[in-house]
Image (cartoon, rainbow, N blue to C red):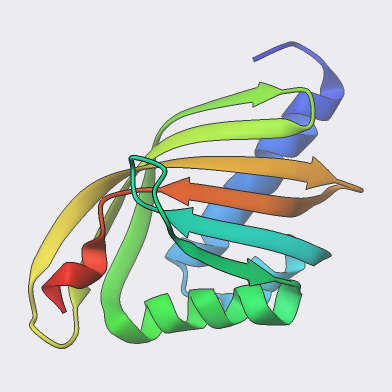
Length: 132
């Protein structure tokens, strides 16, 4: 990570986002998002995925995850800031409510920061919904 203050602010923003997610704090997640946030969620090979636009639509994505997966948390393995972007390698953990299957998945997250908020999220991970 570059030693700039903006990089530290961007990393702190992403950390607050993850902390809110781990607390199941949907309002806290929303507070980190730009009103025009975009989210792309795809498989690790960059194949077709889901797209959401705007804070309300993106929050539906997070609410759905919280409905489908119990005890889900994100463990940050590494994080690096590059200009207006933060890249994270994480491990997603949880239990599918429908099957009580527990486990963890690796994922890569790319956050674009604009006006001090998360303006774009790209997430790449194995398709966890296959187990539902």
